[in-house]
Image (cartoon, rainbow, N blue to C red; front, side):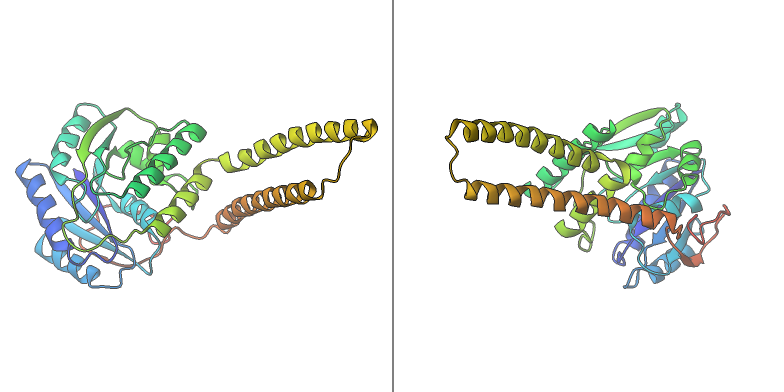
Length: 315
């Protein structure tokens, strides 16, 4: 059986249509399925729409969070609740084309354990957004060795890959990177990002920047190493400047350098403060992890859940 996990936050306009489209495609392809909606603490009528979709189709079930825990929490709650032999992650707004799911399923039946849907084009995105995404993926590749260029949350995972992800103890997760990190036999399929079926995107540049920072610090220690590099560069620069100063002093050519001293103090002070800030950010991540709070809290369910797990407390 195939489980389709769909995170949803304030997606009341899309629930009914998405459930109908996905169900129609899988029924036509004669694939046994279940659809698992995860309501990430929506403030609109999303949960009522999920409940109604579940009443109309017994293959639809839903999980509701007690509050908004973020998309990463919703993804892992869906993986925990899914009972299929393989699981597909797809966005609720249908920007991920569900018509590809039967093809991904066929690739899984042929032996692929992870099928990644890679963006052939990014759709209608601004130049700043594209440059930011490109820089982010390049940094992730250089620091972790994982190529996320064109990657998305649109993936099919074999049960073994799902179980491996569910066993990870960390609280702060980055699904796109972790789904590659766990390994297994991987195949790729390209797709073009479609316009949203309805509603408006919940992401803005500020949220994307925060997500990128959290993802980088959760999956790589590159910023910490950059502090060391900056320290070495300034150490070499200080040694050269020190030698030059001594030579000028003993040769009698020393001149007043008040402006230079002030600039050096400002630059070094800024680097020190940035370094402390980066270290503090990592310490906050460690603090979040050692508290061992759950990734999410489930307050309500609807439909038939065939799989019993520890998804009530997100562990």
